[in-house]
Image (cartoon, rainbow, N blue to C red; front, side):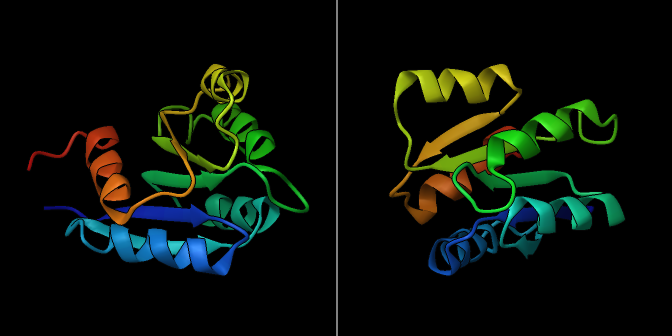
Length: 126
């Protein structure tokens, strides 16, 4: 079984740790982290990732801008990108989905939601 590299991009250290801890429950997944969009962009360009969990509201570069940039990059055009946000309005969800999000989780989130969503977008069997 091959390793799946995941990047968790979240400016809240507590939320980032929750997502990282949850993803550790998926045996195939190995995680890295970034605390804003610019930090993530640098890391994502350095090495390939097969899964990204991405907060929308962050300083320096927000998640929607990073999502848009990643979807224009051939390396990340089809990589699953899961949005994490406190913004649960239908127009926010549709904007993220139009930009190419694979899934959308509204905070507060539970660890099991993270695990289930990761398995779903990666098409992993139970």
